[in-house]
Length: 439
Image 1 (cartoon, rainbow, N blue to C red):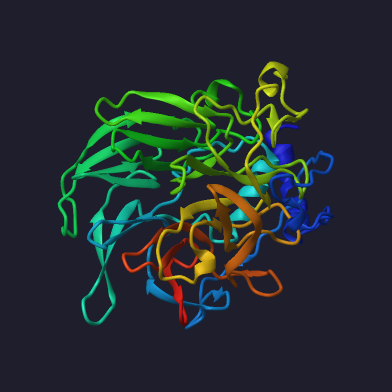
Image 2 (cartoon, rainbow, N blue to C red):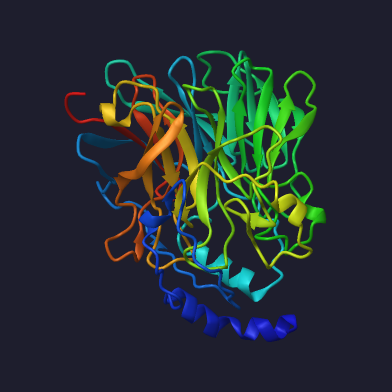
């Protein structure tokens, strides 16, 4: 089918996908949470089912709903697509505002339709390409906003090591001198290391510093769903890279991770953990997104297999040698919930039930009916391992009929006083969650 032919076919197909037509999910998402998720048979689609709510933002005093024992308040709004958060040693909070650079070519009708459908949600809104600093005023408790660093290129990850701030733009890691208490950085900065940025199917680059400050770990997503753009553009993609802070030299730390969007150290064991957005287009209940500890040198399947050694027959050529080495993730989060934020809570502000485990922000599905995700969830940990079911902690980001989208959670952080902070990139807001009563 040539370009003119498939372009004329777009309107009819778009009506179908916007109406949410197609396969209805037959597996309860709760069956896909934990160590051994239920995995149905794969399906094939000319155009996969697509459904997203229409982005409306928060109206008036509307806000997300929190679980019993918690309260939520808005501490910043009017932002430009806030994505990631970092609490500095002095209590200031950095908010990274960005979206993708928009350089991925559109080569198929499916890709065009998906872009239109997802654009309705507000998730594709223009980002600020900047970092805003939030500072809590003594006495009043109000948070003031300052433009801290601008003229960035689709930034996502941010880390502070000593007196140097590291920012992961989509194409490189930049380093800037940081002065405690400053409300802006005006120096141009310098490049520490380049990052893969051709095509940019997945543009976000998560960033985490080692505890000794000598290394930076970078989550680099794939350039496709399952290599439909060719293997050449997947060079150093679908990996976690380890970057030497002193020299900028990098190596692949772990591979086969389709889109590792969040990186954190588990407090008890000190192990590296990540959340991963898995592949699409083989069913509304495939493939579960997940969180997992990361083994140095480990291979996690993409693109040849999923959730361990379940072979993806769409990928050519097959690599049974690699599939035999594929590691099974530690904990499934259910299919298409799109986890974008991971945070191990170490504070004392929240009730005891939320201490010692991981909060996950689920940005929400675009190819599943009913919708999945669109919440902040919590998974408890015992002896450094996830246990039990996910708990829904912050919800209400969509209307009850799932037709309107008020907000979507992304980055997570812990404030100096132990509140859970949430970046909301559809609502252009930062929320603070605290205990509503005795802790």
